[in-house]
Length: 504
Image (cartoon, rainbow, N blue to C red; front, top):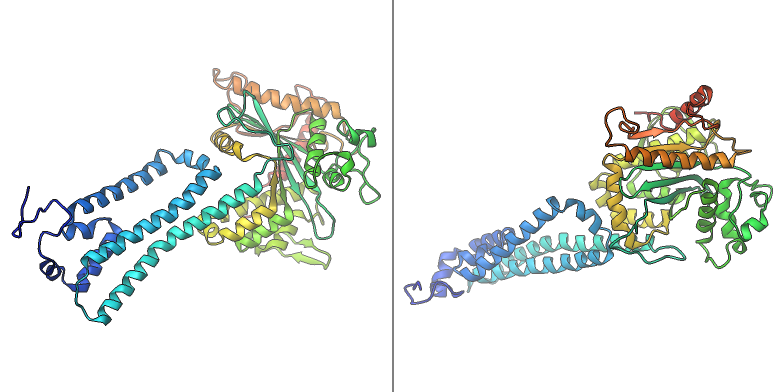
């Protein structure tokens, strides 16, 4: 046991000298503030300086334990963080933990100042020092309060979007795919414009993902597909010979099914409003392709415009004039910062172009947004973006499946094969489609993907051993082993239009 001149034990929290001596050594308010600031950066510094060794060492140990935990989480468990970030309960814990940690940090700073401050100083000097410490505490608590608030906003957005469907089933989180080889997600782009009532799904793609490898097949159907069969039940009874629409302004195209169901609840009995459209369009496309559909995601283009506005606009190069709107507006060539309405028209205008050119512009727009949505821009506009996202996206994917989907998306991005089959002319006729052929080609595309995954480990030159990571199918309408040259050439032209290099 070590004893000081006063006979005090230096291993307890009592100062080793009488208080007057300690205060003299502390050097007044300047020294006290310096120790307080040091303790804000390194817990326990002031306590150790003032001889309170037990408390100082404990605080120092807790500080380094916290630093080590952060380092381990952001390195060893980096991939797991993405999966944890979609668990609402963990997000709630992060919100509460941020506030608690901020209060603990501020408490340590205040206590550090209390043990280091001198006594008997003039009132003005005490007030100035107290104010300085108060400002320091405020500067410390703001980031934690900000983190708690934004985490809560993010959690609210997550739970608002991913509520599950009208007939949502519980998810087995231990085995989310339950032995399923594939998960099929219907990706819809809704074009709810100011000059039309309701939502038209102008973009419809079924993403069929191998749950083991992440290999993905994209099956895209055109908006103007006609004479397609309706699913069994009331919809088929009303349209036994194929969908014919609802009046002269709705001639019976595939992109009208969603809104038709919303306006005619009797074709999807028992399904609540806002779920009727997704229910009928998923059933219809499932029948067209003869593939099951597990979930859907709808991105509404007008909500998408809100996202662009929340970002402060998106900069993009326009290579030729694009007319838009009812007032004769034109997006002029050159580098432009497009705001919500302009970005919407850039993506949806068909003036002097066709659906395929428009689809190419949409891809360019999405790429520009992804490139410009840097962390700083997202964080400074986080609440506006979260609010816009809630308006733009709807889905029936349940919250419990999100961690598994995040894990699966990691496989898709890290080396999985992605193939695309677009049912557009000349592969199929949109006015008189060959549905048995569509189903056969869809099944073949998926079977080829699975065969490629199975043989991917085979010797060089083996079938599928050198599968492309991103391919566009050019199967012929006849389904020959050797595609028709003219058909292949035309299909390749369409593919190039869709995947054209965006102006830079």
